[in-house]
Image 1 (cartoon, helix red, strand yellow):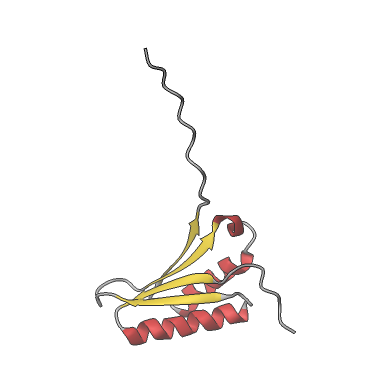
Image 2 (cartoon, rainbow, N blue to C red; image 1 turned 90 degrees about the vertical axis):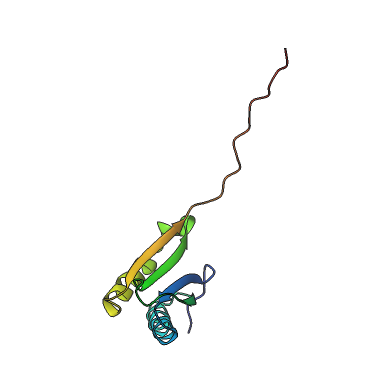
Length: 106
């Protein structure tokens, strides 16, 4: 029996020096997410080989406080990919701009 998905898939951006590394890191991330029953969508990208390998999980602000499994996923990725910089980007909510006071002409 599968667990119902309560939110859309998390975005996992992977930046690596070559396509094979990005693909392999994506497979590791997908396996770790599946073990934690988290929906995940990976976006691998290739950078210059000298750039640090990064894995960034994007998490909406309204889920940040309640999603302990996401933090577990970040820890697992850091353990399985020790050469990569793993981070969680909490995306803030969008609020309307404050109303501007009305100007009076003299």
